[in-house]
Length: 155
Image 1: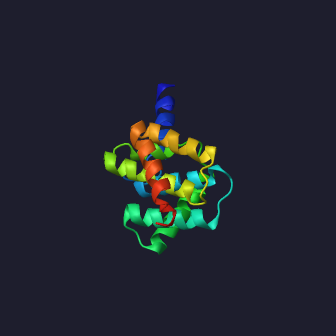
Image 2: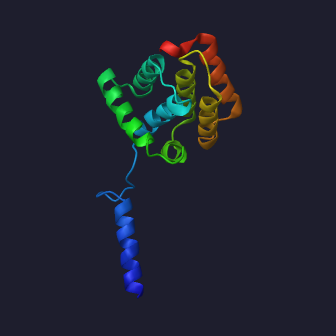
Image 3: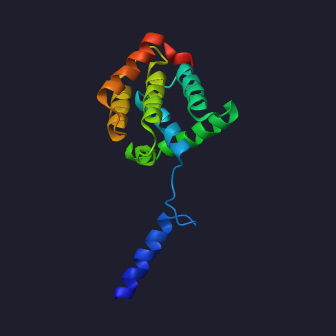
């Protein structure tokens, strides 16, 4: 009976890990793109300015060309259709340095403000992400104000 239990546990663990023994799932890049997609979809109204801002910000954050960024964002969009929580993304990103986490939060604000309106649902996604990534509230607010003051929605 114990052998059967161990076999079931081993098969469950094998299903969760890839061939190299690491946890399967999102890469860091996919997690970052996924969070930008989650912000854009939060208000259920994605316009072209948000798409452009997502692409530009992911290119900037990850030093990708436009084609790579679009492919990454499409993968992220597909994943986000089945995502159950922001934790799926933030779990992968906690080990990033503080500056990168803050840059990600600022990129999320840029996507939210791309249509010159920050919906409360978009703000809630960004706030929760900042909390899960241990971004200080002052940095969270500073990133928001930086985006609004610089009207950084096109970069």
